[in-house]
Length: 397
Length: 117
Figure 1 (cartoon, each protein chain N blue to C red):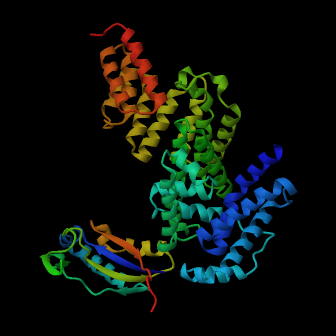
Figure 2 (figure 1 turned 45 degrees about the horizontal axis):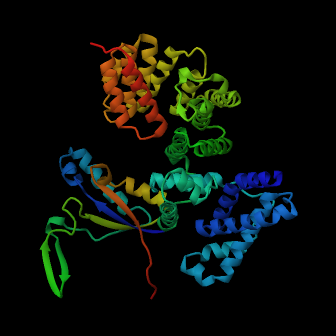
Figure 3 (figure 1 turned 90 degrees about the horizontal axis):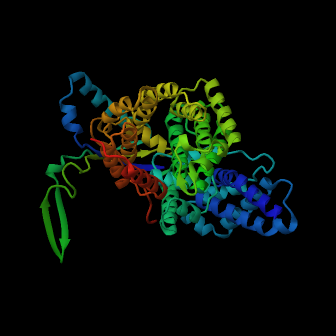
């Protein structure tokens, strides 16, 4: 059993690196992916019997490279047809098997290129860097496997046909392109927040890889810190499958090790002079993990974040913090200025503040509106519980 | 890589006509700059879509209608060919095109070889 677990771990750790190096070497996503898959399949067959080689990465890389070279030699006609001649010639050059370049950064910038649709960026990143299977990605995003397979095929075809480069962008493009990469990881993490644990774990894994590859970028550390801090409360956010609000959470179920990890990443980001959106969100998440919560400081940070992003959702969060420091009425005044009429959290926030003020009828209407806009099981059941509690409360005038 | 760069004027032409003289000069200079960019082969200048004629053949009959195949606003307004290392290089050229910043857009279409002689 131990053997199997470590095999999975090696695969998990090595997939992205092996694939990235092969793409860099072969110049073709599909051929590289097929070769990597073949090498991993041979390993899955042999390693449990013969033991894991002393340098698994070199073994996988060499096996995959040989497989790709054989295939291109065997199928020159195919190679020409798909414009692989260059890659074929390149494959004749012996690859240095002792020091493989780590080209995962090149790979992630290719996967998150803005010329690809966002959903394709997300799927490609999970497939190429995270090593998730098409079936796993499809399941995580609740789409049929065939749809996800087509999405991946189309994206890879476009990378080749449109000439999306396999490289770390030059300095003048790096900022905006890195923003796109971080946005993809953030999106994966957000999908995981609703309870799909595997996506949250995947996002953190990608965040760690990015922090290792770009150790001097504060936003990279900020994003990782934020994800670690949010995820540390995962166990406590759900009790018997039901949503539990921060105030009511059993703090003994918070993952203290992960909170410490997250705070260390946040410190690193701050030491690098970070004051960007992810660093601010990480700082807020860190304050949320304190007892008692410093709501005044949280409100100030949300204010700074709102100035940076101009996001009404951030303003909504600031209103929640203001309600804690200046009372529910102050929070409500802020909420009333926001235009987010179809955003379920606007209505649930209003409902909560109205409930605290004893304005039961208005609270009930707001909870109903929030429920209308919510399809997620646990969140919806939470709103229904609140409505039942209100029904038992005395009517307000 | 060879790219066909399609120029969509959208509302750019009206926008540019209303510009102060200095900015109009800049627009002309930008057009010229694009044409002189290494790798660019300028296309044949296209007339206005309102003067286009669209032809279809149905049941052996040639049907001729006034105007472009798509709507007047969606009609292609011009094109050029760009030889560039990769899509990022093509995006940089496209972003310098005046149509892109005055309400139109540039579409980057990789060229493709479908048959060999």
